Structure formats: C-alpha cells, structure tokens
Length: 309
Image (cartoon, rainbow, N blue to C red):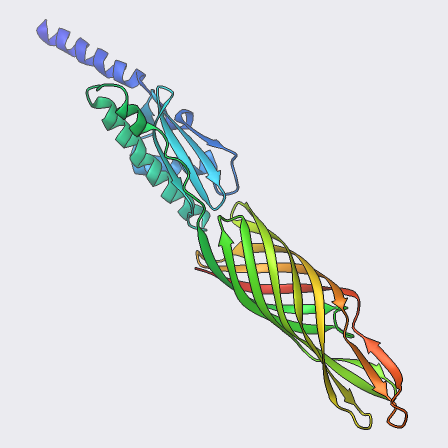
C-alpha cells in the first residue's frame, strides 16, 4: 500500500512539473524579423544549446535586430530579469543566429538559477535585473578603394580611380576623404586634338542605413583639383594645368564579404562649378581659334572594396 501511495505521489509531482513548462516556440518571439533573424531560424540553435524543447512557463524571451547587431531581454513573470545588446554580430546568417542563440540560452539558464534563490529585499535586486542602457555610439575607421567609369565628366568616356579613409560614427554618420585620378580623355580641336585628365580629391558627408546584412549610403560632397590638358598634332603644343571644382551626390550599396571586407556599388551625380577650358591659340595673333570646355554635368559608376577596422 505504501508503495502504491509513493508511486502516485511521484506521478503527480512529475505531471505538475511538466505542466509548468511551455514549448520554446511559445516562449521566444522576434520583433521585426529580417532575412537573418527569424524565430524559426533561431529555435533550432536554442534547442541545441539548451538540450531541450521547453522552458519554465514563467519565462519569455524577446529578441530584436538592431542594425548590424541585436539585443534581447529575458522576462520572468512579465518582468525583465536579464538583457544584453550586441553592437556587431558575424556577417554570416548561420553564425549570427548561433552566437545569438548561445547568449539567449545562457541567459535563460541564469534566470532559472536566479529564480531558485531565496527572495531578498526589493530595491537593489530590481535595479540589478533592469536592462542596461544602450551603449554610446562608437566610431570606427574604413579604407575604401574603387574603380570608376566617368560619363560626361571629361570630353570622352574615361576611367577613374579613388582611394581614401572613412570615419563611421555610430553606424549612421560618415565622413569620407579620397584622392582621385582619371585616365586621359581626348577632344577635337581642329586641326589637332587636346588630351585632358583630372587629378584631385573629394570630401563627402554621408548618412547610412543598415538593411539586414547590407547597408545603404547617401552622400553629398565636393571635388577639387586640376585639369591637365595637352595639345596633340598642333604646332607649339604644350601642357596646361587649370583648376576645377565640382559638387557630387552619391548613392551606394555595401555588401559584406567577411567581417572586415565588403564590396560596394556606387553611383555619383556630378555638377561642375569651375569648368576647365582649353584653347587652340593662333601663333601669329595670339587669339583663340577654338575652345573646348569640360561638360557641365555627368555621372560616375563605381565598384569598390572596403576594408573595415
């Protein structure tokens, strides 16, 4: 009889414990699911780290993507008990989900252990379980190098090359400075030609927006330097250097290849404020027989590599 009573008691305790659990799929929710961060993608990793498919019914987890990183909070009876924020996570979606799931699993286990401790006086304990405030924006450095196709910037279609550093502040603002050089482009100055080339630099102020793993850049800036022209197939041909100044607007798309390397596609709009002009001079009178000026506006298509420090 005693054995029967003991068996019934043990069965009742086991069924009560099971009733206090709920499936992970009900306990975990993801705000603003993205391409990488989804609940269905996160759950298999959580089951692997926890080695179970259920958690205490009093617990809940809210996960939210935050640009290149993420944050989550563990709730106990609806009250925050643990929180963590990652400013940057791995670029690969499987690695990102695995790292985030491990952190959530550790926080769930820690919350369960905390719930087993004897209750203490309210006050300091409540402050300790409150979510930590967001960290202040950090600045980091990037180095970008790109090849360009220039249309209506020089008299003919030309190539260009640009390299320079960027200062990214809080993953939102950016200051970029670059050195710039183009190939030689020609224009007719009957009976000869003039070859022209641009060399100088540009300064841009940009805004960024993360869209999952990729990012968009919108920039406005200015370019300045010298236009180098040289007469061809004319008598007394010589080289001349004249200044140029232009305004630029850029729209770019960045695609991470690794944690520190990215590919970037960009399109620029160009307006010349100071347009270089080259003249064909009559040796006898000194008067200009013909002139050619650089275009007023044009466009630039660019493909670049970005190294992220």
